[in-house]
Image 1 (cartoon, protein in one colour):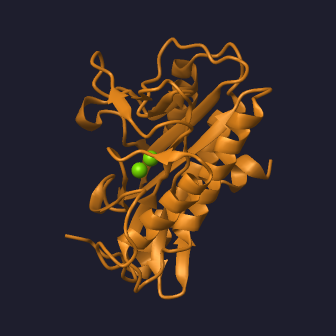
Image 2 (image 1 turned 135 degrees about the horizontal axis):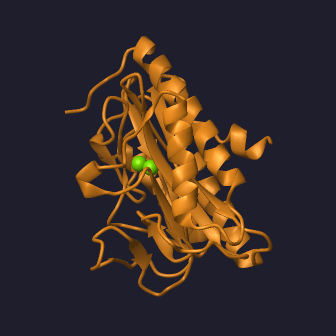
Length: 255
Ligand code: MG
Ligand code: MG
């Protein structure tokens, strides 16, 4: 069942989204060669708790940390640990927080120092795909319109989108209905209605779309061909006039 949110509830999700935007920026400031992903997770978890919120990934189906931190060929669900960040890496931070009972979900892929033009282009196209998908978040459209727009933008740029994982409803819980795939056929899938809140999250591979999940930890999702991937995510409310984006990259990008 798709749970609709009232205007008041959407404002409370926006509060969570704003704090989440600050959190991603705070952790992003610490991304540099020589730090470990566990260190970044610690900084972020402390920031979330200091601001009166809860990190929802931690403990979710046994996931051990507050953030998914996914480096280079890890698409999503990287577990923070003793991996050292190095020059040229791409580092995606994905986090879900609960502030006063309302939930926001957002992800951003950072680069570290000098990165190749190929990597920069992958990040640029993935970020664009997110906003092209968000543009479809209007009452009367369907979920397939979002996925189709994301997929077309990525594929026309020579990239591929992951099939195994997708966006989702969010707001009261971390994962709600409907699923929001990053591929699709226009005019198909659940109808978008005013008051729906969803997470749109392109997971884009530089090479083939095929991924594998770690046998050791059951979480880490890597590209099969070892090529890099990128991930950007916003939580958005559907309105009659279009998307009302409830998370923000402003704290990251307007430093
Ligand atoms: Mg997320
Ligand atoms: Mg999500």
